[in-house]
Image 1: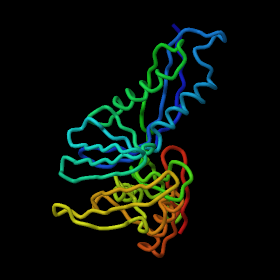
Image 2: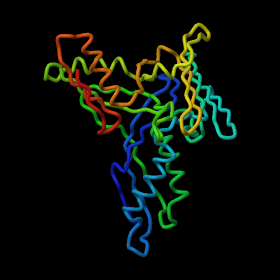
Image 3: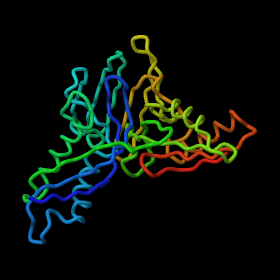
Image 4: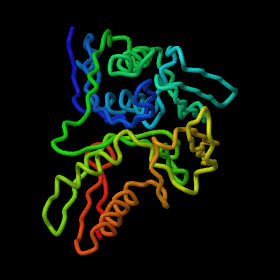
Amino acid sequence: MTTLFVNRLTVIDFSYLDPIAGLLGESWQVDIELDGSLDHQGMVLDFGDVKKQVKQIIDSEFDHCLLVPAQHPHCQIQQLEHRCDIQFQLDSGDIIRHSGPYSAICLINADRINEAALISAISEKLLALLPDNVQALRIRLYPEQITGAWYRYSHGLKHHAGNCQRIAHGHRSRIVIYRNGTRDPNLETDWAKRWADIYIGTLSDQQETFQELGKAYFRFGYTAKQGLFKLEIPSDRCYLIDTDSTVENLAQHIADTLKQENPADTFRVEAYEGVDKGAVGLA
């Protein structure tokens, strides 16, 4: 038996439903080990195939999806011909509803989304598709180690040609802010608190504000290339902006807001979208 490993094979950017925190954006890096016998090339699996096959499966099945704990007692799932409707009640009594194409949703056979549940789902998918000489695999999922401020957010980009158009996917993101040319950790911490576990919604996508059991909710919706998307979420779990929530717009939004709050100062904002990518906003 021989073991092949690839560290940081990919990053899964996704959102998931949590009974306490609600709709959470995340970014988990993926390490993988494959156990097996050697093939005719003297390999368990060619590194090129690992990157093409394994990474492609993980990205297509789990990346930029909403992960749903299908076994949670307060998760209701209605599976339609080409769509899936989800209603998820939190421990607080708050309700989150999501409606979208099957491709945007990943049902996890667990009562809670965590590393172990997602590892089990990925392993089951991979073992069914890998060559017969691969006999076992191990997966490690972990967030980026961030020194300083960071936040988790979910969003959707209706104009995006790829999977970012899905209305509830997300990221764990660091933030770096320079005030008058000097890094300001206090401002970074402040924005990390403002956007902690938040849904960033575009005003033009907001269809309705309504009350349910004394709670204010926002209903978002739009039609993108992959189909019709809808999301209902408590308004106090949202942050509304005037533009699409691309990382370029988010970085500029933070910079402009800081400038409005501190007109005598200049700002450079480095906003990340997951791991090692992002945009700069200046004001």
